Structures are given as C-alpha cells and as structure tokens.
Image (cartoon, rainbow, N blue to C red; front, side, top):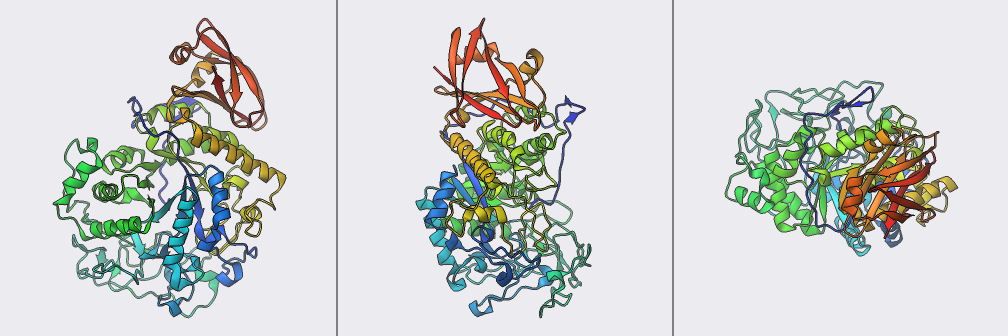
Length: 623
C-alpha cells in the first residue's frame, strides 16, 4: 500500500550524479544457485470470469474469484511461466461490504471501508481469511489450507500479507487461538498513549467520518442500511497514517487505525534499542537479544500472528509499509520467524533509501522493494525522458545490498505498464524487463496480467483506471482472455498477447535456471559510450558471469530507432573470463534463433550487433 511517495534526483540534464546514500562496498557473495521469481496475484480477481464490470458493482453484479480457481492446471501454468513463489494478495480477512452474518461475521460500515470489496490493507481478523474467497465461507480456512497444499504440490512457495502498521477500525477476531485477545481489547483508552496499548487514542472525542471529496460518496451513492455518515468509535483513535484528528481527512487512511509499538506521541521509544554494531549479528543473536526482554504488547501480537501462519503452511510474508514501524520490532519479529523457519521469505515495502540498510541488517529483512532507485529510473527511460546512464549508477550504489532489493515493473500500487498514463504499450516493457530481471542476483516480481499486457482501464468504483482496482469487485479483461473460461490456456488471447506472454515465459525461465545471474556483474555501458560509434544512451549493456557461465546482456529502450555497432568487452573482463585471442561463438538465450561471434584482439573483445527497436539479447559465450 504505497501512499508515501519518496523520490531522489540523481540525473540532471543527462549528467549522472552520485547520491548521499551510495556506497562503494563490494557485493556480498551468495551461495544460492538460482534466482527467485515472485508472482503477485490479487486473489479475488484471478479466477473471476464475470465481464460485467459495473462501477461499484456488487459481488453478484461483477463476480469474484475463489481459492478453488487456483486448480492444478492454473498453478501449473503459473509455475511454467517461471515462477518460484506466489504472493496471494488479499488473503487475511479484511473489512468488506457483503453480508456474512449467517456465518457469524459482523457487517462492515461503508463509511469506513474503501470500495465495496474493501482494501486488503484494512485487516479485520488476522486469524482468518477473506470469506469472499471461499466456496463455503464457513469453511474458508480449510479452503485456504487446500490452496497452500496445491501450491506446494505444484512446486511453488506461498507468500501472504501482514500489515503491522494498522488494522481495520472494526477489528474483530472470530477464531483467535486460545489466550489471544483482539487488538485494543485490553487497552486503557482514557489516555492517549500507554506502552502496552495497541492503539493511540484521542481522549474525550468521538470519531467522525471524513468529509467526502472529488464527488466521492461510499458505494457510489447507493443507499445502505449501515451507511449513515457515522461510525461509532469513542474515544476516537489515531488513523493508520498517523493522523491525530478525530475527523481524518478524506486522503488519510481513514478506514484504518494506527498500531502502537511503544513509540510515544513525541517520538521517543519505550523499548530497548539494539546495541551498536548489532547490524552485523545474525538472526540468532537478535533472537537471543530479545528473548529475555519485555516488549510492547503489539510486538507479541504480531509475532503470534506470523508464527500461526507459518504453522498453517505459509512460506513467507510481504510486510506492508514496513518503514512506518520501528526497526527494532522487525529485529524482534523476523528473528522469531527465522528461528522457526530459516527459509521463510520476508519481503518489505520500504521507500526511503536512507533506511534500506537498517531494515535489511538490523531488521533482518530478506528483501525490500527497489522502487525509488531501479523502478523509478527504468520508468523514466520507458517514458522517453530518462537515460540508461543512470542504471549503472543505481547498481553501483546498491552493490552491498543488491541481492536484497526486489525488482519489479508492476505491482498493485503502481500503474499498469499498458495504461495510457504510463506508456500505453506493453511492448515498451520488454527491454526494461530484461534489464530488471538480469542485472542483479535479486528476486524478480511480476503482477498477474502484466504478462499479457493488462492496461487497468476499468472504472471500478473507489479505484480509478491505470491501476487494477484493489478496492472493488471487478473483472480483469486481458487476464480473463488468458484464463479462457478457466481452461487457463490463453485460448482467447490475441497473437500479440500470446507473443508477449511467451516473452515473459522465456525470460523468467531463463533467469531461474541461469547460474551466472547469481554470480558477478559489471557494467560495460560507459566503456562503450566512450569507445563505440553509434552506441546511444537509449541502449544499456552489462555482463554477468559465474565459473561455468558467461553472459553479455544488451537492451535497446528506443521504440523507433535501431542501432548497429561493434559492442566492446573491456580487457579486464576478458582477463577475468580467461579468454584467449581468437573467436568464440555466442548463443542468444531468449529465443535461441541467433548466433554471433565474439572476437578477441589485443585482450579486448568485440561483437558486431544490430539492435532493432525494443530488442534485447542475452548472449552466452560457448567455450
């Protein structure tokens, strides 16, 4: 749930400048053999075949996908795309507008729910799952367990969301384990703050719903028996984004309340801090540090939640807005998680580059979004005004943590590539995707529908076009054509959409099978800009290698111009690769349709290339 936009500017008039948080540290060495690929799927949208797409449509109008839609065929197709981990977005039970009182679930008030299907980041019950996703809502936990088992049987891992910064205003657990109380159940709400309160309060106040703006009204103005412009919350609580107003602004996260981690309203902390140098200690040392210490109640609650889902069979978590929660809590939580299962996949949403290393080393995160650095740089290039010169600078600055920075071109927060507000054409993502997926050892993530050029054009209700709605019941048209009435065979795709999906499939499968992509990296871009005629700032080149595999990657981001030049491989790389003078055959790895020649003279390599618009090559040197 990216709602804080942070940006850095390191590219001015085509001149690359270094940023303060850059580092010249050498990259870590990793023993992992292959890269990880995450497939983010919005669970309630994936299997929905309904094409009505009525704005503010009910579940009956527009339909909804189910856990059961991820059958063996669907999961095998996801696996065959080149996926290792499936992030099932929107699984924990969040507030929504549908009547499940017959199953013991309380109704939610539209005045504090965004959209009709509800935000997945306003969790109402952490020990259960979204009833919309079950064929039988009374059996929803068992249906999710079956999905986990099917995913594992298909050879993939399962990731779900945890949202520690905030919960739904009407949080209410129905199936809490014995001894577990709800958030806020034991709070002293007569004071603004107490270290063991789960929430912050505004004493002597009553919550007021926001004043609606931009012609917005809940449910699009449809009458609803609960929606009356009021929500009973006495005293009012701080809102999820930190607003301390009893009546939050329309643009505040008014559907949520902020969780208290022992940080006083003045910003001082009511918990132990990590000792100096503890960022160099492993998770076992972090676990030992916290084991004998008293921590705020909210810390314990979220630890119990995470361990519950690990016991349930989940393999990892994506932590929403992690930087809004103290790094010491992450040290506590993640060390507890890793003690239970060291292989747990931990991905965090962090946007401030100055915090990256703290959240990785002190907070023991495995991976963070590489949004502000790589994604933003590539987006500018795709849109036509950025230079590829910036990408090697980003990689140099990330050298010591590059493995921990998850790469993506789409997720539920970002605009769809094919949307008119981004680039309007999914073909423009091809060179960007090659670079994103091959430039480092980090995991790669794609968002469902990206592989068939989904434009996010639906007017769903609360959400607006350019992003596929996460707030309303909706169908996803391009994805639905691939789904082909749940045959999951792409039978309704156009020829261009089929070719696009084939590109993603080839690329992702190459990445998870390449040894070199878990090895070393060196850019050759600036060397060629200085020494190669016709080499342009719309082109990017670099090399990747391991003991048994040597790769040359080159991409043309230009959508209209082709480039012909003699790409050069610097002497130091030729020495590192232990190549002798003469000629070596190059095999192109994406389509296997092209072979070239690497010629080595006086210790320097060269290869004649013609790059068509938006074309990329991944060459492997055959020895």
